[in-house]
Image (tube, rainbow, N blue to C red; front, top):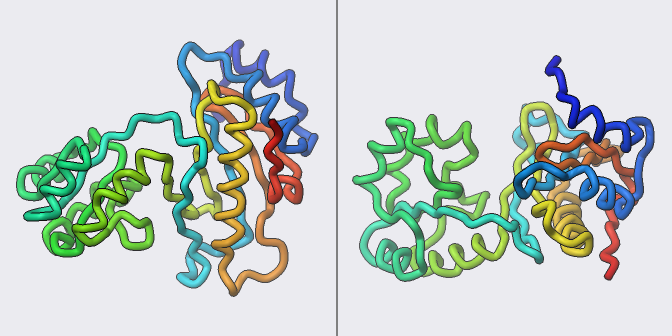
Length: 238
């Protein structure tokens, strides 16, 4: 088990590990415990009652955060012809196929999201072993495999705060809802959008309670457990 430093142990004293906090209380705490020397990311971790080994219980979708992510994205677009031209006009940082495929195969991943057109998927399919484990491989379900004429709108949505979430092998979701510098209302707005998307993505084969636990935390802060029922209807307060 990892040992925490003095700073973390001090912050942890302000959070009761046995309490299931209401969402607004949790947001107050996560902001109060985010005092690193950089703008920490605030994440929501959701444990689901699903079996990710079963194809019909995979939970994967996208959500646009109303207040944005607070992050400047570097976008790579795998496209050729008109798709490449549209991607360049839309402001993608990297555009192409043949010049980037060998770089990625060698381990280059200096980008935050990859988009591709269906026409080039045959070329980049082998990149899955590099990009897949990092969550960077374009996919139709993730909304990152799009027709050439959809590229500008996809890039615009990504910059506005569209994020993809996918259940991991331990039945958990890990979804960013903004930065610690965001106002409490902005974080609540994003959190509410995330919870709505997660509930909407519930597999039809899941029986009983779908969401088992919800925890909110900042990059360097302690985990704050949240009341599950209240988390599913996060209220945005001015």
